[in-house]
Length: 348
Ligand code: TXA
Ligand code: MG
Image (cartoon, rainbow, N blue to C red; front, side):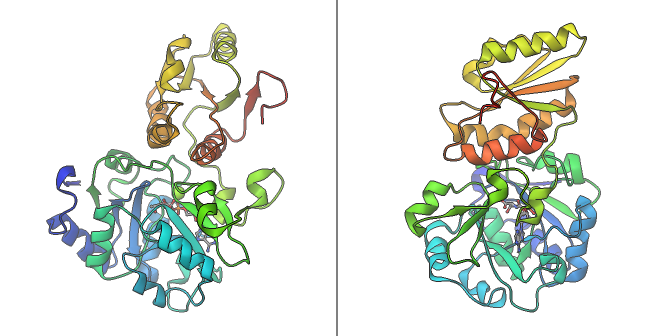
């Protein structure tokens, strides 16, 4: 795949940018970095182009895509009505990891919105993403550039692992940065509602929009999520994962029990506590004291277990504050909500 010199990313004159934009204009699908995860882009107005995304990813047809723009003026062709609080949020967080759900305008490929009357829109912050969208001159539909069900890609090599041979190209901009996907916010209600926690935290949104609600399905089980994508199993490594609420000593006891049963055990740990574990494989993902660093390396860590010989994985839990909400949302999804708690009350 193509590479782009990371230090020179800010230039918009890279041949890779033009090449990617030309392929997009020809209704091909191309992967490129955003500040959250790599996206798999296609012309949002073309049925043929958007269908290629679903084919390449093996994505269920009822899971709509996010439309990426490089300029506010592009909103005119995508949405009909923008509430004042959404305008304020765009001003504060665009370009950035915030996706707004708004009433859609006719003209978009129907495969982008999967039959809904709303559309998800975001302006990414990555200079390469912005340059490619601008150069293509089109709104670009782009889900994360992974095979459906796998952790989202935070390196170009993750994209290649999943999609090499299935897409027209990959623009390599190095590691993405934020590491978890954008926050998806429903802006069709009186108050904004978080449908997927992500790179912009609830606390940050509230500084601009006042009170922000959270979709019931994120708070307790048994509610159908409003964001179709949230109902699918996701991010799962090849071996079963369990999230452990409790001390490193408690987690180590679980490891030893499984090893006595003959299992090879992996542990996903923050750097601070990694030396507490004697397991078959210990993989670290950032520092607990810096949850941004955990978010940045979480998916790479989950993918690393796919290459390791373990039968079962235990992961530490992280505080549900700031970006910790997105981290725990993804970890619990990766675990299929399998949890163990030292205190016996499931730790929540
Ligand atoms: O950070 C990100 O958002 C990345 C980068 C590439 O921009 N993209 C991403 O896309 O994560 P994807 O397709 O993996 O996730 C999009 C989420 C899904 O959960 C989908 O169901 C939801 O957004 N979504 C899209 N359109 C929607 C709509 N009209 N109403 C509710 N949810 C919607
Ligand atoms: Mg995805």
